[in-house]
Image (tube, helix red, strand yellow):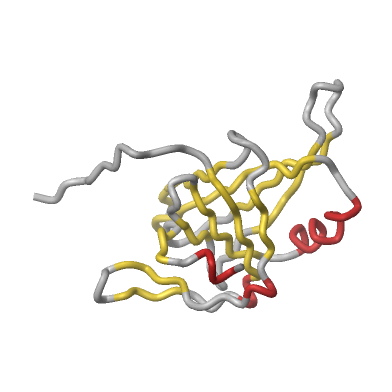
Length: 162
């Protein structure tokens, strides 16, 4: 009998996002010894790092569906970049105009690779100053796409991007 295993040391949310230009993505492969998906090497000079702003501001969701063409998965990585600033303007424009493979690192340390070179994610934003002093002034963002496979949990040492 096959059985789903539970890890009860479980916390929600995302901890970090690493965005790799789809044109620079080297792919992933299956390690036949460990039966795990391994991310191929990544050039850290092309990666855009987005750290988590505050607890409850980052999330990963992936909806599964089926249509006439078969199964598909729609991953979404959402977050908030606080306070619009001149320092981030050109990088945000680069994200908005590009196509991305996103490494979503959750609060448990699991790394999901969302998208690939053939089916990358796109980045969209919604900027607001808020309507009151106590409201959040910032940029809500979302990476999303439609894939022919689910996002894979991968073996990857995040220190390789430092």
